[in-house]
Image (tube, rainbow, N blue to C red; front, side, top):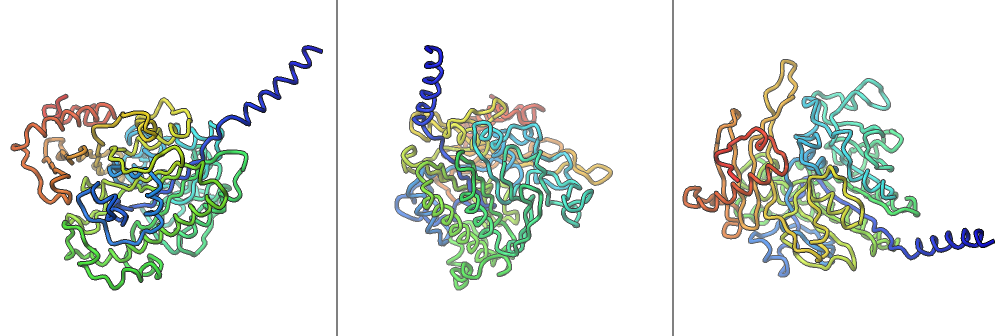
Length: 499
């Protein structure tokens, strides 16, 4: 009898303990493609204006503005390698590109450039902790292979080189709900593959459709489990040339603005052929704002907002005629390198503007830390959850920057090697870059004082700032060693990069 009573009491106590245990937070991570930080209009408001010396774009972003007022707003979140696929590899794994397998954008001409199938990803970590995980939208982390579910042995697109890709279940890394694609840039004619591998062609604006599916997921998810939901919008990524690329209601907000109103940044060159794109780009910024607001509304309607970590960020920025460069990304200019990062966690994170130099590799461990989920040993990034929570003063001295281009093609036209053209840093004051020639000899240095010169119009003289450069070289050498970068392993510019 005594033994039987004890057996009854133990489960009862266990059930009580489970009921009293703190509920794990949900996580919603929304990241549009090519959304630059200065495209958020709240940076012009009095509370935020002092964080940067520049003027924000003349965009309409009322929902994100209100969200920022409830959140921690990072002024110096940086996209370590500011192009699509490498960012996604770092976000998914917390590892730098060479370690996670994605060094450049994924496409058939770069056959080895794909997410390491053995990597422990953010979805794997959350699923192991009992979460249901969903991924909606653009993935762009797999090299295309001839694995079309509806046409075995064929690629999912006919153009060559192929960019778009289907991700089979064994490569989804813990995401139970799947509604995604590789990369495809027809904003009003998107397509997706669902959890079972069926293709969907909804023939509607992708940002709205992504949001509809996110709301559907929130309503139909397994209510017994906490969840991680990633929503990867493609706009405001290009194309941005006509009403085929955006919603007319959003374009109408900007159509009557002339260049003096559209281009408020002092480093913009409106003589560029790309200049008309601003109206369509800003239109999609506003569309993203509206649809993000719908996700927030659904969380509130379901009573999920109080225990859900919500992040709004981007994979990289968009130069949009700044600095006179054609490439919208893959540069150390702030319009490309600096991204939004706004995080809300009610009752846990106090609203503030924080200048912490958060890098792409730090996102995964920081989110896991905030949720109380174990961080895989493979992660190279840093967990700054305690810093965000205010229980630690741990802060990085810099954020690493990487720019990598194709190496020389082989006899078949494939790029199996890469050219690590530039490495650099963002500190609380300076932006610093060193580039090399293809034979790895020194090419040039760039140094900007971002406080005195927020539009990066006046590069500092390297010799006149020798002490600053020396300190930055020491910091860069340390970061390259920490990341096990090819510059460190092959001792590139070793005489300059002394620790």
